[in-house]
Image (cartoon, rainbow, N blue to C red):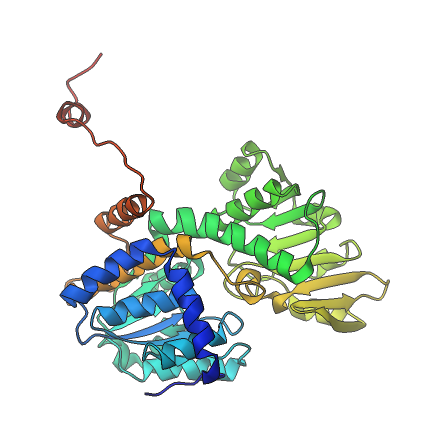
Length: 418
């Protein structure tokens, strides 16, 4: 079995953590039990570029139980949990190509390693795998049945590929499922981002001015969790509808420059480039903390900050201090990469349960639809989205009502009035 990981001796520790996460992933467990009996992915080779975490490990085990051959690489150089990678190789017989802290060259070498299997299905978190496949292996891409994409950032890239007529096979936007973005993005990113900030800094959030750039589902989650811990939350937005919603939700909304002057802690979650840049650094307070919870490390202009600094040093794990000429200090967390995964463990397993159940069921759906889907980006089929919600409620021991026949008829009728 081919693989490239940091230390196989970490495998036992990783296995224990994978099994611990599984206790909170009952929907995926339900799917796995069916997969073990039916083997719906028998013979399918799956190339997956995802964060190598305990939750992802449970997804890989589920795909293998379905008869597939999953091959996994990292979707971010700092999100790999080396003990999990080792456990997948040693205890579960799954090929993994990922090392925490790998450089850019190694990162893309690992992506090519999983693409070398000539996959039937691709699974992406950010679309680096699929874009590499399209740039370098077009003939191979034409043989792929379908793919899935986990993130908002990745879906944006894939939509661009579709609009430009270069997408070579269908991709299901798992991120767009209600049981993904309404929960994973909001509750998962909200909690794990705060977790990453606190693990890195051990600061008190209560009373701090906490600036959130972007009020999408991730930004909503972060803003609400920060408020829940006593922070004064300021939202920066460019979309008037989202900005208005933030105001109505009770947050202060202002421009990025005014927020830069007031903020103690800054978090970006927009998916765009240089959201925090030189002009902002020039007016920030002494000891301002800056971090990113978007997929790529482009949201903070790290080059500008480095150029402005007269000195830089690591003061804690995942905390780098930049000393400016006037004596002010700015602290960058986790090299500007996803702070929730680089400085903490990422989303809690209970919320990833729904996201990865969507992944598993969408892979099954796409594999069975070979040749029937167009080369475009698809939303998750509604029946899958609803089934994941139903299973989640069931595993939580929650029952809900169904419509009566009379109510069903009323909702279908236009002639029944008051």
